[in-house]
Length: 208
Image 1 (tube, rainbow, N blue to C red):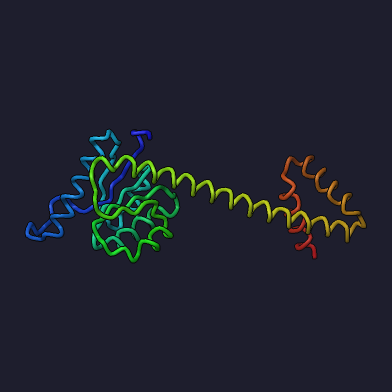
Image 2: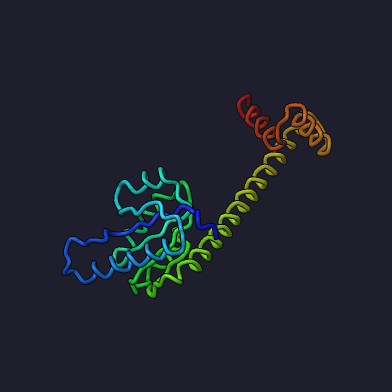
């Protein structure tokens, strides 16, 4: 793993307003352990951000390679903020939490969380967790790219078939001749075959 990955942690303040709040103090201690673990392993921790309305703007400015969310009982609300903030620029999201209520894990993963780690945070676990999260994110992005490419190819094939049919109907060409005409036009104009087909269909629709 490249330790120079730009990592942002989304976490509560390390100094809770109420020092008698045991939950807040416990969460602050876990958050401190997480940050120390990152630094001990040489990771590039560029910022620690609160969960607020400016989170999206901060992430857009910092452009981190990975986002770590440190949350407890308010994990759902925190994740909603982070997922929304990374919607236009997807990146790995790792959640560390002590909240044993895992009823919303499925929703979190579907929303874009790459790894959901419940309890047991220890510095030596951080590296393998991040390695798995990055590998999973890369795999999922590759699958999404393949899906988009397949969808685009299918759409282009449909356009080409429709354009061929139009040429066959209006110019009395055979299917092969119609295809060759489309291909020659694409070559002459330096365009993709699907783009030529789309323009021809748009023009036919415009002229009626």
